[in-house]
Image (cartoon, rainbow, N blue to C red):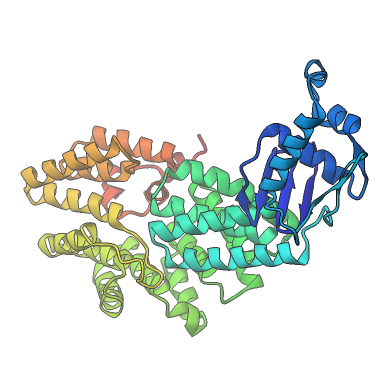
Amino acid sequence: MNKVFYFGPFTLDAAQHRLYRRGLAVRITSRTLRLLHVLVSNPAVTLRFEDLVAMAWEDRENRSEVTEATLRQHVLMLRHALDESATNRYIATDYGRGYRFVGEVTERPSPLVDSLVEQFCAAGAEFRDAASPAALTASLNLYERALNIDDSSAPALAGAALTRVLVADFLYRRPKEQLEIAKGLAEAALAADPNSVEALCALCKVRLDYNWDFAAAEVLAQRALAIDPHHRIAAFMYAWILVLTGRSTESLAFVDALPGDVGGTNIMQTCCGIAALFSGKYANAMERLGAASKRWPDYWFARTFLGLSLLLAGGEREALHHFDAVRVAAYDPLVDRQMNARFFAEGYALYARFRIGENEEAAAALQRLTRLSEAQFVPSTCFALAELGRGDVQAALRHIEASRENRECWYTHLGVDPIVKDLHLDPGALYRAA
């Protein structure tokens, strides 16, 4: 079995031993699946009982036990799996001779199947834009259904890759695994379509957070922007890379020069505030991030970094108020283009509590996170910031190393994060590939 066949709403992936109907797996026995493969490999040809048994029953020792009644039973199961009806037939019975596959079989998706792939990709992109954990899970499922129909579809490959890196970035699932999967998907998408902006953005994020190759990431972001200057993720990635490489002024100028429908978005305005924050301009950062938080009250990404600006400027109590608001927020999946920053807020809140002497509250929150980590992935970021807050540098460094191993996005920020600058970490050593 080495081909993919398409007929009606079905996709038979012979190499993977899978049958899909509109992108959803069909339950079918391995023997019945082999029988289907034999039939679709010989469309419109009547195959005799002996031929079908010889090709579908590869284990010779069992062939002698196969009767015509056995074959009829498998054909019946196959017809049930294909949901045949009087007006929708795939298998014809030539009485006294054998069976014949009468459906139209192609080795490329039909217009109907192509339309389904397009619909799944469009829905996947819509869910991905919502950016909530549930929406990203739904997005992945939709792209998976598209790929089950056509695993060479560049839009489906690219869309799945970009969704994976967003899952990794927001730390809903183990980021290292998500980035590894995204890399393969993005490379396959670019092999099919070198101008896929979504694939370029996904691979850019992989180069940034998995390989810590900022130069390669910058080239990919520039390529994406050259193809689509209005692509918001490509614009953010380029501005973000400029910030991470110490070019905050250049980043601000880039955002100011963007078209209004891109530069005026919540993520780009927040990026400007973070650029000021990471360059040590705390007053300017508070002004920019405060304006973003006021304009988009539920945009937790901006509010978290507003809290960090206040913390570094000496407003610990006010900073903690913002961290707690994000940390305990009931997530609203209807908030437009929301970014979940709750794990960042957890870590910075722990840091702040230990610093202002709320040790009991901080210890209780840390214990809760430790228990949570036994049931699900909790980024080491949280624990590293907690240990930095209570002054245990060696423990913090151990968690930072775990953050490196996990490929958490926070690790990529260590060269500019104001809180960890006191550790005097060497960026060159930080980002040297493991």
